[in-house]
Image (cartoon, rainbow, N blue to C red):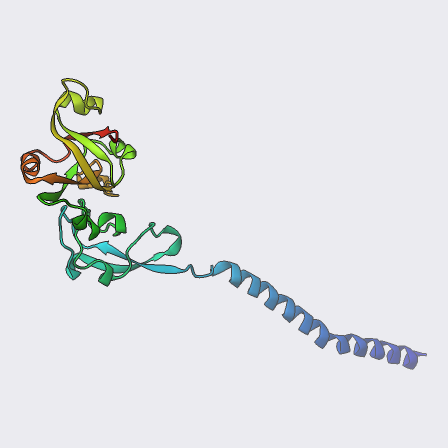
Length: 222
């Protein structure tokens, strides 16, 4: 009787031991699956990046871009500005239409298009003037006709060329381009800029005015 019981116990032990390899393999597979899931969550997928040109130093309006003025960096594609310039060959030799701060991305709207010179009539020159506030540029676009006023302190506070607030320094001037303000408010040039066509006498009157002291009034087409 004792011999029979011993044999039964031995058979049961052998069955348990025979199942261990399968159980160990299943447990290892489960551990590996958990580790794989954790590692896939811990390491996010790399974001696509695009080349962007940024300025290496502050640039005043009218700067003809050189290689040393720009640096190529890789930005996440999701935050690259619209119309960003990514190749030095598309920027070097072009003229900046408005002030730019150090590290600001270069966009096509910052460059004076070569078509501007073609839009000038005989005796005209293209010049850049800064507006007293960015809100004025909202109603302006290339091709518009404007009157420009040299704003007094009262006109700058009100934000519009009210009667007696400033005197007109240019009439019926053609807007060649509207340049948005710098992305960095600390650059000091608060408003938008305009590239306008004017005769040399009018351009000379603008030359003696402080930057950012002009108010624009849209002139309806005749």
